[in-house]
Image 1 (tube, rainbow over the protein chains, first blue to last red):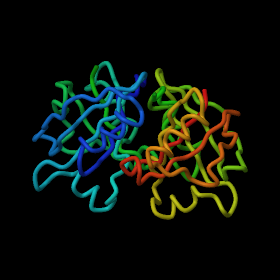
Image 2 (image 1 turned 30 degrees about the horizontal axis):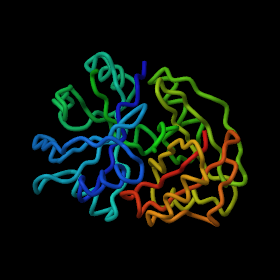
Image 3 (image 1 turned 90 degrees about the vertical axis):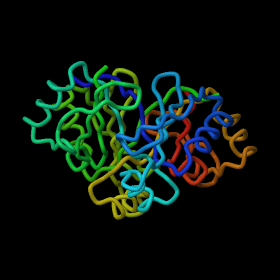
Length: 134
Length: 134
């Protein structure tokens, strides 16, 4: 069963500049940027009344976000993150339904400390899906 | 001041097929598709615990979603819709901050009957933004 939309991930070149637009134009609450070398990103969360925006910028040469920005130079909406109560049960259910898990298939500790993994966009209407255990 | 994330718009070739994935894999509540000729789309809303997904497919030759799908054949995340209490005040505030409003700048009645307009993605980190009066 699908949980809350934890956040929308938006890839940008500069998370602080992107968040500043949300702070000034939208009056949104902006967190400090966090480096996540294991994911190759710097992440910065913006709090909305019912969910969050996660701005991500590339960290390191092999960052997957760098490839996204090469295709989308102005930045763009990168992924949707849904909450699940049990990530192993959720992963196995998705695999049983034919969805492909990215990477080695094992959950990784994401930004903020929760276990997360990504599902292939071709299996979800072209949208890259992150599921996070919350 | 920014309101709730009303929905995430995902462009697809077939809204029913896309929603069926959310219904079966996620157990999400799926609404009936609605034709919105004024926007050139068929829209179908999927209810999440804290927001909604709006699947949109092209309707008619001049649909802006057809152009998006030409660039993104598998579909993809198309826009974010934020709620505002007063769309004219919000529009004028965005314009004063240098953001560009798409079309003729006047709000249109969107799917579901609320007034809505779109802001240029180049002004919002590459993300097409819809604001909706709620």
